[in-house]
Image (tube, rainbow, N blue to C red; front, side, top):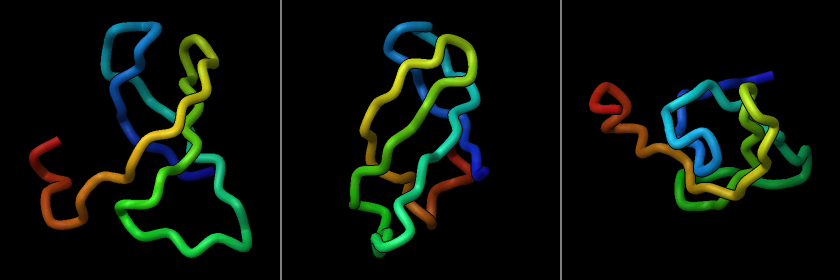
Length: 57
Protein backbone atom coordinates (compact mmCIF):
# COMPACT_ATOMS: atom_id res chain seq x y z
CA UNK A 1 0.00 0.00 0.00
CA UNK A 2 1.42 3.44 -0.84
CA UNK A 3 2.29 5.69 2.07
CA UNK A 4 3.08 9.36 2.72
CA UNK A 5 4.03 11.43 5.73
CA UNK A 6 1.03 13.72 6.31
CA UNK A 7 -0.22 15.86 9.19
CA UNK A 8 -2.80 14.05 11.33
CA UNK A 9 -5.54 16.14 12.97
CA UNK A 10 -5.93 13.73 15.90
CA UNK A 11 -2.22 13.08 16.62
CA UNK A 12 -1.34 16.75 15.95
CA UNK A 13 1.89 15.60 14.30
CA UNK A 14 3.21 14.51 10.91
CA UNK A 15 2.86 10.72 10.78
CA UNK A 16 2.91 7.97 8.16
CA UNK A 17 -0.43 7.63 6.37
CA UNK A 18 -1.62 4.82 4.11
CA UNK A 19 -3.44 5.87 0.93
CA UNK A 20 -6.65 3.96 0.24
CA UNK A 21 -6.95 4.06 -3.55
CA UNK A 22 -10.05 3.47 -5.59
CA UNK A 23 -9.21 1.34 -8.65
CA UNK A 24 -11.54 3.19 -11.05
CA UNK A 25 -10.49 6.74 -10.10
CA UNK A 26 -7.99 8.83 -12.06
CA UNK A 27 -5.77 10.58 -9.54
CA UNK A 28 -4.34 14.01 -10.10
CA UNK A 29 -2.76 15.93 -7.24
CA UNK A 30 -5.88 18.08 -6.73
CA UNK A 31 -8.25 15.12 -6.29
CA UNK A 32 -8.98 14.29 -2.67
CA UNK A 33 -7.74 10.89 -1.53
CA UNK A 34 -8.62 8.83 1.53
CA UNK A 35 -5.69 8.72 3.96
CA UNK A 36 -5.51 6.50 7.06
CA UNK A 37 -3.13 7.36 9.90
CA UNK A 38 -1.03 4.42 11.07
CA UNK A 39 -0.71 5.79 14.62
CA UNK A 40 -4.37 6.38 15.56
CA UNK A 41 -6.32 4.96 12.58
CA UNK A 42 -8.16 8.22 11.75
CA UNK A 43 -9.40 8.36 8.15
CA UNK A 44 -9.45 11.72 6.37
CA UNK A 45 -9.81 13.08 2.85
CA UNK A 46 -6.83 15.20 1.82
CA UNK A 47 -5.43 16.55 -1.41
CA UNK A 48 -2.32 14.96 -2.82
CA UNK A 49 1.08 16.57 -2.46
CA UNK A 50 2.26 18.70 -5.37
CA UNK A 51 4.64 16.62 -7.52
CA UNK A 52 7.09 19.48 -8.04
CA UNK A 53 7.42 20.29 -4.34
CA UNK A 54 7.71 16.90 -2.65
CA UNK A 55 11.23 17.71 -1.46
CA UNK A 56 9.84 20.64 0.56
CA UNK A 57 7.52 18.43 2.63
